[in-house]
Image (tube, rainbow, N blue to C red; front, side, top):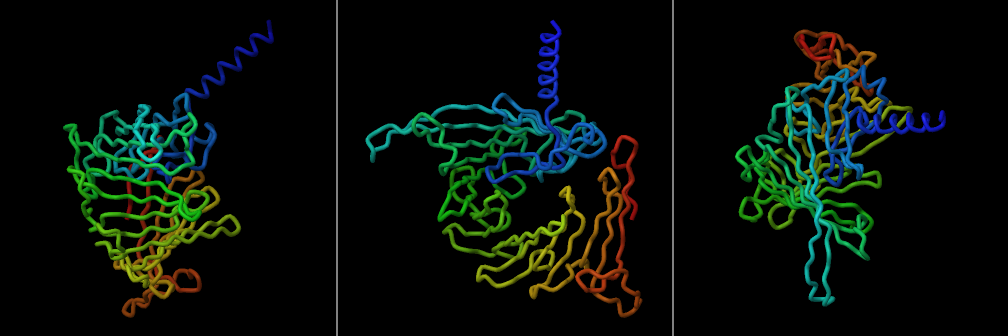
Length: 368
């Protein structure tokens, strides 16, 4: 009898844990344009920090992602979808499409998955994403080979944006529909994203770009992207560059990630902030600790706002409590002495921002 009771208790615990879901420090959109949790945390720690809760269906696909502070819903910019989003709800519809193949004189089959995203704020009110998009729908189509879905093969995806009225609408980039091709070419994992208008014609987005080529490393991390025109040729975007290369390094628990910008000729150039490189540093828990700006010669530089370096200070529960901003440009009038050195370069203090939270972990004030 005791064994049966223990077994029932264990099963109840498993069901309970499944219902509660999993917790992660961060959420991001991966190569397959799926939202995934990054850096898992146990429930005990989740109760003390800002994190994300994931709930899954029987196929282990996320159906609900909730942004939380000390286990209470909080509004945030969830995975870059937009401000004031506390929860993302996800629904799936799986079907099979068949098509006659005139080359093999046979019927090809494809597994089609429709994924629908809707967003809500902490008051459970429906809110827009990526501008004025109220419903974001992804259609994945993968070949079926030998009766099984070939997940390792090349596949495609249609991404459609719908407004509050239920009709296709422009997102914040001025695009109604994206067509994505996921391909492996010469051992390199690539994604080609093409912008479309409402009438299935290729268009330019707000950046003057019709197509973006993304390349990923073996870990699924973005390492390269380039802008293209309607003919697939390299083009400089309105943001000042054509190509972005991402370099990563990891040393003694400190990870750095550097974005470098180049024009369509492959020459070093600057982005809209006036910098050639953006070097970010992270701690062992993957929290951002600092940002350093570089010029076209790879040296420490300054943005158009005069900022060269920013550091982000967190408390023991990883809440940002202060941001400090510095410049490498010496003020010839004030002649203020440098406050610190970064990579051997003297840094002069500009200003700081202090963040104050209430007992529940919600931001209550920003002091400048």
